Image 1 (spheres, rainbow, N blue to C red):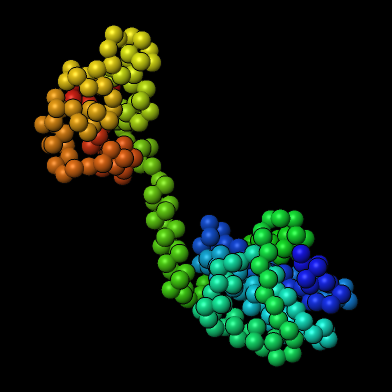
Image 2 (image 1 turned 90 degrees about the vertical axis):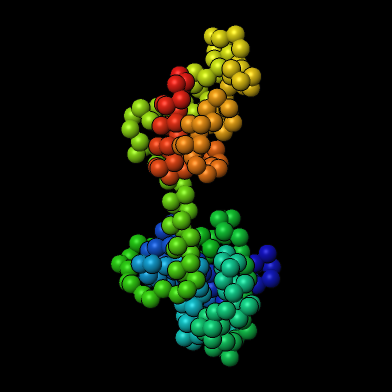
Amino acid sequence: MIADHYPEEAWIHAYTDGSATDAVRDGGAGVLVRYPEGEAQTASIPTGLHCTNYSAEVQALRTAATIVDGSDHECPQVVFLTDAMSALQALSANKETELNNALQQVAQNRRVVLQWVPAHCDIAGNEAADKLAKEGASKEQFTSQLQYKEKKTIIKNKRKTRAEKDDYHLLQREEQVVLLRLRTGHNRLNHHMATKLKLVPSPLCPCGKNQTAEHILQACPYHSALRDTTWPEETALQKKLYGPREDLERTARFALQSGLTI
């Protein structure tokens, strides 16, 4: 498609890419500019200690625009090729003033086209820009003032990291054993002992329902008093089994105090 719409003998090709570790730090921008005569220019720059993928992508496009604008090659048209759809959408919504100004500067002397390309599809120029971006990210970084969008992305990333963190390893050994058995269902409650291990005749709880971890933790009337004491407010099963440390400790304590063999 690129060769058909933008033949190399008639267009300057400017490939750009940006990257950031964990999407929020140690950013890098990579640029590969190819001219019809066969000459090429590259750039590999760090974009900041605290930098999002998006900001690195925008910086890569700005850098490419600066390179092309400063070139004395006479080719009258340039296509900027990027896999950063978010950056292109921001441009179309007039949300990137500096980048827009840089492109407008190029457009004073050349026809400018912005073209999205898919990432990691063996497009040589795009792969080269990706490599240059990673090289830029590995260089010594600088600290810059964060934009509002970057702050939001970093906070969101931290929240996601906390959500993915499991406080299970912070529990005492006895608590870990109980919690693991409740989570996996591989325990000594009647449902597992009867249906999986065939060691007891019935999977039922004395109350008449299947004696599963969910039943014990959420519904069994035989343990309602202890359950209400342990969780004064209604608490979801997910939180009891996978919540923060305090919730996991409550669940383990409930199981140990219930008198059941878990």
